[in-house]
Length: 344
Image 1 (cartoon, one colour):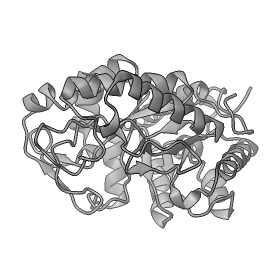
Image 2 (cartoon, helix red, strand yellow; image 1 turned 180 degrees about the horizontal axis):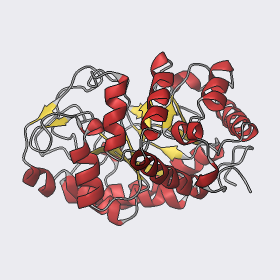
Image 3 (tube, helix red, strand yellow; image 1 turned 90 degrees about the vertical axis):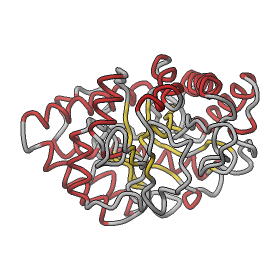
């Protein structure tokens, strides 16, 4: 029995906490920082950026070394993630196949299938198993917002159709899809990397437009959904989506019936101004599974310690922590990557 296959009952409290973290690092090979993240903090996922990539062979070796080290530490296989939307957000460059227009260049269902199938196969061969894509945001006709170069062109139903095909094709070809950015940032003009955007819209308007692609994605069993860092004043005037119990737990889980993985967007982004204890408290209360921190910093270890503290503070919190662990392990079994870098 592999570590990914073993019962969640056999995981230590530190392993339960660490599996909730997906983190970035500096470097292009297994190093002491990664060994600390995997062996000491028991992180459940690694996300790669351009700074971590030099060639297909290097990614394959890095992925293989990471998975082998996790196994040697008694930890489950890791989610190995990347943002490969095509267009302006594509961490894998040539000789990987490029789709320079990204989502705006997808005009037909055949285009969507070709992009997703090619990308999935190349990612899988490199030992990756999670893509932070597709973008499911809807940009109104005649509007040019912060997501203009990253969205599918068309109305909410067109976006839903293209998104569904990309999700299905990714997942049929061994790559976990993560639809983003729930509940939708197509009408946003401010950049959440730099500041906290506010969206003054009613729930009814969101339901009729922005939520349509997410509803279809959920119906077609998308395995991951990433929350936005936007404050939706008509739903939760206090907390941005990545920290909002009203959005993640009530709307996404309870109302829309989603039981896949919920991820925050990168907590390093400047839209999130709260301290780590506050962030983790909100994330745990909202039934969010994965805490995403994309840059090397003490914030990662602080978040780990806060998760340990939170899940051990009450039986209720431990039960919620175990529910998240079960969701994580279920998908790790489905998208397990062997130490040689290919699907097991």
